[in-house]
Structure formats: C-alpha cells, structure tokens
Length: 493
Image (cartoon, rainbow, N blue to C red; front, side):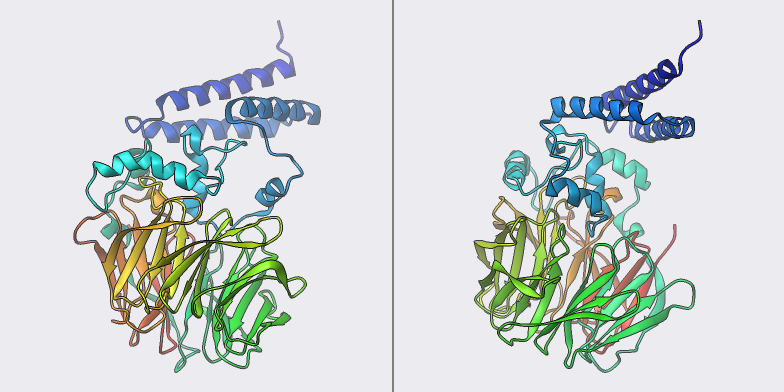
C-alpha cells in the first residue's frame, strides 16, 4: 500500500521527535558526543524537508501543534503581536555568543514560553542565587557552580586550558591615526569579525576595516568640538551614538559617516558615557558631569519622561543586563547604582546603591548573565581605581551586588575598562580581560582560587584604557592613553 505524502511527512516528524527524545534522555556529561550526533541528524531531516517543500496549510498546522505542546510544557505563549515577540524577532542583538548559547540549556527552569531563554530579570537573579547558595557553601571561594553540560562543553572545545585558548601570536595591526590624544574607547561591531571603531579625545571617531588586507581606516567621523568620551554601536551596526565633552550627543550613520542628529545635553554638562537599551535601540542612556543619568529617544532627540535620575558624582560608566530591565551606573565618588528600567515607557526607578570604595571613581561596568556554562549566576565586572579588578555577583532582581573576588592590576587614576570574554561557554574556565596602567593587557581566570593570571600582552607605551574582542575571539583590540590602537591575533591551534 502506497504511503501518502502527508503520511511520509508525518513519519519524518515522528522520526525527528524520536531523535529529540533520545537526545534529551542521553543529554548528560557521560555522552557529550550525543549532542553532535543529534544536531547532525536534525539538520539532515530539516534539509530533506526543505527540499521536499511544505504546503502552507501543513506548516501552519505543525506550528500550531508545536505551540500547543510548548505551551503545555513551559507555560502560556507570548502574544504574537507583543512588544517582546517583536523585539525577539528583530534583535540580532549585541548579546554575546555565550548569551545566545543559553537557548540550548536543557534545564526547563531556564526556558521561556517558546522553549528559549527566559528573561533573567523576572526574579531569576534571586531564584538562581537561591539555587546556587547551598552549592557555594560547600565550595572554596572563587569556584563555580557545575551544570549538567559542563563536560560536554569541554569536549566540544577540545578540553584545552585557558592559557592555550588565549595565547596570542602577536600584533595583527597597529592604528595610530589618533596619536598624541587618548583613545578611551575601542569596540568591534556586534557579531562582526573585522569591523572596528574607536573614539579619541581629539574629537573624532574612526571606523576601521581589518579585512581585506591591509587593514584600513574607512572613514573618520568629525563634528564634535571637544574630545569624544564614549560611543556605542546599534544592534544592527547601522548607526553609532557618541558622547562628548562638548556637551552633545551625536547619532552617526556608519555606512557613509553622516551625522544624522545632534542632541545637546539639557543642562549643558559634559557627556561622559552612553549605552543603547539592548532591546529597543530607539532609546539611549547617557551620563553627564552634573551627576545625571538621562534616557534619550534618539528619534525625537528628547529626554524620556521619568527617564532621569541623579547620582552622587559624575557618571562615568553604564551597563544594562541582557534583557534590558536592569541598568547599573557608576560615578566618580565610588558608588554603583542599580535602576529598574520600564520597557514600555523608558522610566528609571532607582533600586540599590553599592559603595565600592569611597572616593574611588568607577570607570567601567560590564554585565554578564552567565560567567560560564559552569557558573550561571549573573555577574558584574567593575574597575574602580583601586589597583584591582572587581567581580560581583548579582543576587536579586533589583541589582544587589555581592563581591565574589578581585584581581590585581595597576589602576589608580586612568579610566581603565574591562570585558568578559564572549565565548566562555565553550572554554574550560571563564576568562575576563582588562586594561591596566602598567601598559599591559591582562587576562584572568575567574575560576582559579590562586594564580588567576592567564596571559599578559605587552606592546603599548602608555596606560591601556580599553579592550574589545571580535565575535569569535580571533582578534582582540586594545587602546591606550597615547592614542595607539593595537589589534592582537590569537594563536591558531
């Protein structure tokens, strides 16, 4: 008896479901190779189905049934027309590769309504802290919380050490177009390997292309009348926002370098830092020298009603969590404030305050939902002119911070910045990178209780102010107080 087309497709879907069940049943550290086998078979089935083609009605029926099954297991689905659904569809996102890999976590509590990553802001900071507390009490300081896929991640990475993963062969290129003026900020474009930008206290921003060789400066954005203190790429990399000591914020088109809009600070104060709201890039947060944080609508050039707050000092650093519901701001008096961000209105609500060290400027804040696949607790990386790099744990959904550990660097006066490495989910260990006033770039393993230093890059002739990885960690850029930008190439194994 001939099998109908619908019957054949049903068989394929059942076969895929069987593979999925087997995968879930064996998804343990004992069988790390099963992940690869499952993904290969799933991809093969998807390719076969794509070639065969699906009648639109059959696909709609499949999606409806799939949605019902997911809803039964993980809770009610989001409304298709909701802001959350829309933002998820457009956010190619500045979230790192690590954050995207959370979609594959097998713990149902980490899954949202669509079987993907649940927003970490809806009480999950507090939930995760409670889940980890018992484990942390039995582990030495600086150690991490193991997960069910830690061994699988190591197997996929080749089980190499952090020292091997972050060994660099040398300099790939040196940019010196801003020589004699400090370059406080350098950033690779989001999800991009070869596009780089840096801002300078000479009042300009350089857009650079590393491939094809030789690396070149594509264009220089000019318009600010004083030094550029900070800038940020939009999620799709089509625009940049910059802040300046001339008390203005500018919006630039990265394609041709046009200045789309100039937005003066309402109080005429120097603008010192900026960041995009990670889900809604129509909103930007800026910090100024008169202790104010403002949420600005870049389409209208106006402050958002209820989107302003005052700190205890000059605002030097800003950072959102990945879902954009928590904002941290650091000032030059040594305080870090957390704010609850209303996604619908842009309103800021002050939540918590931490005094890192009285009178020590907080020059950098970097947030990460996961430190590694082995340490799920959300963390904050802070530079604060204490000759230390500080790692904090976020313990609740109001942004309360608890010091986990610190790492020795040289920083007493310069605005040094640091970052989490983007691909830590596939590394044995978890690494952070920071500039330093000793003219070196330092790598630290947050898991090691002793001898946390992993690597040190030497080549700058002035304090290193900022560091930035490209999306696959093949290149690292660092900038210094003399205006030099060095692009380092990772050694290939």
